Length: 316
Image (cartoon, helix red, strand yellow):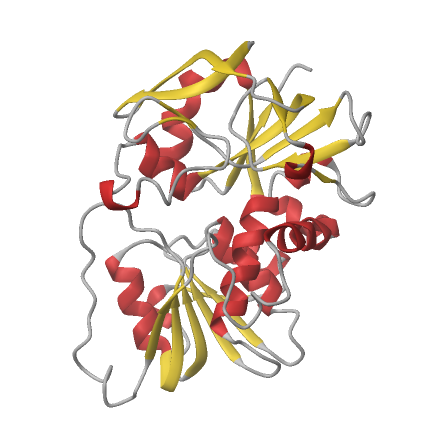
């Protein structure tokens, strides 16, 4: 069986075409979310060949670079099985109907509306980034790049007791976003210095330079961006060595070593959904498009620097 799905069929070219429904529990998709950073790399064909296998989405169809059915933030209504009649989240592509294994479905908490639950995959990434950073109570934390993941890291870090958290972004409009999430805000030229922890989430060489400049002696700088194919300049001169900075990567495909003995991927995603109970997080939904209109809007959504999480509504 097939159903309409969004396919990237060539560089910056998408269309709705049949996609396999899959096997398992029948689901009617209600919403899905566009993860701008990753999906733009897929859309432009910039997934490195060396990482093609590791960067596959859980229920992706096709192979990189093209054609691929991609995405990992779907909210659906189960029509059969143990969750029949309930709303569930799955790491699934932009597709109208699907069948997935029951153990791939996470029921939505009662206090998390399906419209907001499209943020779950990004919240899971943000939680992993915060773990990798080692940020703690009272720390001075800067997040360079206030996209969806960066903003969610800021939201989580701001809830550490006594933490001083600043979102740093080139867009002044992100100041109101930062305030809504309980964070301070600064442009790159006014970023705080001497930070205990710095998160880089702008996927740019300039942003990474700003992140390194904001770090205090022996601080940790976490690279949370996925840069895709190509090279990124890293300024390791200056005070990088004399300050004994730590530059570490964070990637949601693996659990941090200190938590891996106790946490599973399902536990982490379940917790991410629970963390979405706060209505303040609705500020991260920057727009909505009907599924039938998505092919004509997809490029503009990904190209717009104002895009955070763009929600897709399905006619089910």
